Image 1 (cartoon, rainbow, N blue to C red):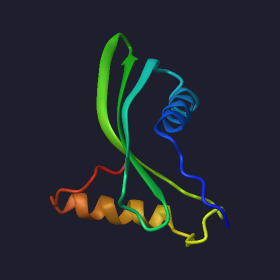
Image 2: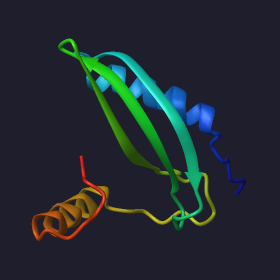
Image 3: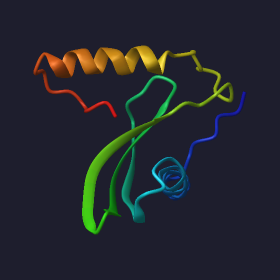
Length: 102
């Protein structure tokens, strides 16, 4: 099976479309500093910065996105993102520094 590696520009465009669809009340979404990270077993992991306007105020965040490869990867192993989200929330509640699950 041939693997397709996403390019940062593709990720930037996809994230901008996602933000505009999932958070329609915000405007002027700007995705930048997209960097592919080497970590991850079968998923591609990218860090990025995002800025947007929300009710007249600028909001900015540094975030991480984990892209599910679907079945295009020979190394693909199904994962339970819901379970992983719940685990991160529990760890966060215990005041242990982890990426903030959103």
